[in-house]
Amino acid sequence: MPYAQVYCAAPHPQLPVPSDMSQQFQHDVLVIGSGAAGLSLALNLPDHLRIAVLSKAELANGSTYWAQGGVAAVLDDSDTVQSHVEDTLDAGGGLCRESAVRFTVEHSREAIDWLIEQGVPFTRDERHSVDDGGFEFHLTREGGHSHRRIIHAADATGAAIFTTLLEQARKRPNIELLDQRVAVDLITQQRLGQEGERCLGAYVLNRHSGEVDTFGARFTVLATGGAAKVYLYTSNPDGACGDGIAMAWRAGCRVANLEFNQFHPTCLYHPQAKSFLITEALRGEGALLRLPSGERFMPRFDPREELAPRDIVARAIDHEMKRLGVDCVYLDITHKPAAFIKSHFPTVYERCLAFGIDITRQPIPVVPAAHYTCGGVMVDERGHTDVPGLYAIGETSFTGLHGANRMASNSLLECFVYARAAAADIQANLHQVSPAAPLPAWDASQVTDSDEDVIIAHNWDELRRFMWDYVGIVRTSKRLQRAEHRVRLLLDEIDEFYSNYKVSRDLIELRNLAQVAELMIRSAMLRKESRGLHYTLDYPQLLDAPKDTVLSPRPPAPSADD
Image 1 (cartoon, rainbow, N blue to C red):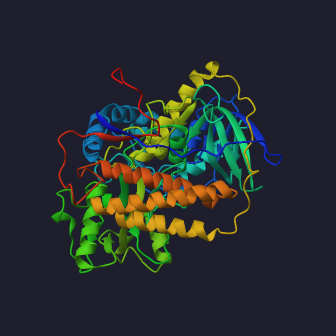
Image 2 (image 1 turned 45 degrees about the vertical axis):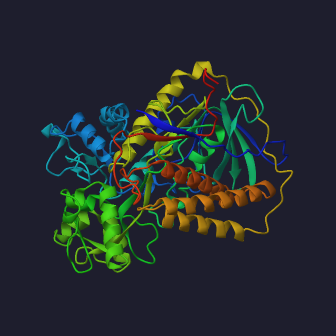
């Protein structure tokens, strides 16, 4: 597929010199991120490899644990690979890479079989038993899907998957699970002044000790999730700061399609309900969107009504809220039996009840919120990035699966399929890579403790507010120009702060978030059309030829004419 490639200079990295306080670690595989993608990759590697899986907070603090809906896969006899492929291509607004879509869908059944083998307690279909010969698990339907193909564990699928995979990882003595470890930057041969570009590991802040440790590895895997915390309102946990995307960019990797940020249409609107997503499965089971008057509005926007793709539903809600000047709309499933609601959506029921909302009797106040980063670090079907020895999987990566708009429940599927593919590739190439050698330690000799952390808090708040206002669900060229101006000033301020003070989690996350925000803004400015999740009032029409937006931190190679 053709694309527009733009060269954007990356900032200069902080160079390492020895420190007496930091520690040195050596592993065969370093996995940065402890969610579905990272744990799946670790569990698919052979037992003789030494593997480190890092989490920058508690192990369960990633997005996987909070995923409610499920995993899309071709599991029922009435469904087909071609149907799933066509649904995904349709939702992706002409930008999906069909080879990536087909690769993912064709490997969906084996990925689910592997999860079942690990012991994930998916919800069973009471109408079938194992002896019936049919598929024994309950399947639901979500927006954009033409069939019931979402396998789930009630409405807490992410928690069920994460808990199971974590339990399996803890049984493997070769897998070291380390929490409170915040990756600062990747270590490459180029960074150390050596010949070559291979990734050799990472510098990692140990929040237990306050020191930056050095992790050497034969292979390094980025599984750090997306960057939805760049927006003021998001369904994501606090750690979704685009760390892997920013680190890969600084290491020399291209990124693609970062203008496509999915806003989940239905997050709970309540002053005390921080980042609580109302699963799309409610709409799959018949929930209706209503205005404060009780009137339905989705039939006016799309013939698929509440089951239209997320970008359409989110824009419809945004339009109605602005048109009427209301704070929220309402998701109503009260027409379903109370027993059905409680059994199918126990998490949503209990959480809403805690805020005084009985969803069996009352509609749920909802608003759109930033949810998923469809673009990311460019990879192939084995998870390879542009830097040898460095892989990216899950939401951190750009595989081409999601195109201009991710279809519901394809994201977890992507995690498992690409994690398994990357693990197989690492195993196949072990013989070509020598064990990791000791690396220079992090330099903390030229920095001091900060006495101005209020700057971090102010910059963090300003960044998320102008991204919400200027680079949100509906955009204009003028808004994007304002955002670009502000983010450049912020990057200069952050770079100065980073150069003079010791790193902290807040500073690392702010630095990464600002870098990814700049990449998102540049990508959005380059797209002179409205497609999928990128909607601009200045260019409301589609271009005839869909193109990926690719940014490169390296200058283009000279041509024969130069």
